[in-house]
Image (tube, rainbow, N blue to C red; front, side):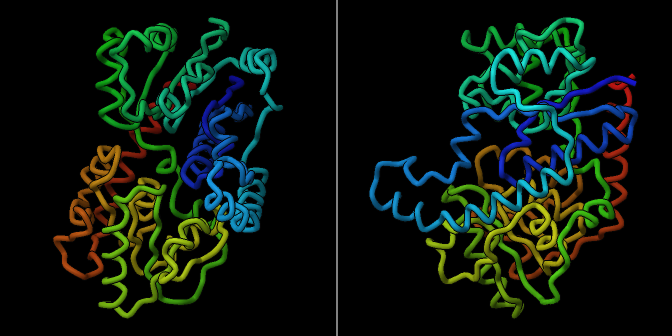
Length: 366
């Protein structure tokens, strides 16, 4: 059996980032990679983003808000860390160059992905995700990696392209990433595969979820701080009024400061994220992964499509024939109704797509 390492954003206290890492590792182990570890590398940009320090800004109002958020952040970070410890197998810490190279060179294969590991604008040009110093004896593979809209036609990407030429297999999770890389890697057969969260079945995700809450509610999940979520929130409020279901918001306390007229769930980890999506009458979101889990867990949903990197959301709606679940600036073709979805059709499509992506997994593990 091959000893396999996975290099991704598993240390981020972000629902999608951690859950995709959990799913990919479990899938690799189930399909023959019995020795599989997440390479325990935490880049500076992730550490800074999820730090509880209130002094990341010099603006007094921001500092005060950050101080008020500390208890909520501590609870949230603790839930993420507990979930991470219970559901992943990690290597030792790899913060120095020597420890990173030594750890990576101890594997027979390294899988880079999923997530925006090749979006150099996000990672601040972190070259670790391109494995430049890792021995050629280590087989380099990408699973559902994303460029996140980064431009690979420029001279500054030359070193990255040279590194990717050493990869034996490359798969990405959206057509835009394939197009971006195909321009420079014409000799590579770059495939499009499902985000790793789709590789795990509904029943297995529910085993990781917190205990369900017995109440009727509409869940609003806002990803990031983009103003594009505002129309979706207004739609969620109107849908709540129309249906009589309580509207609950799942995100962090900073969002609650701004939207105090909506009931906030409070500090939540990945188990609660799964629980709240699974039990909702309807999910309204601007998030790819909230959309993905709504599909997996068969929860009716609406997703705002006028967002940054909207191609991956539109792609997932197209794959599962769920275009009617898209919002355009908070407007729905269905009006103020919870969408009626033929889940038997969706689940069949998901099974077919899952088998296609698992076939790629089986091929790279040979």
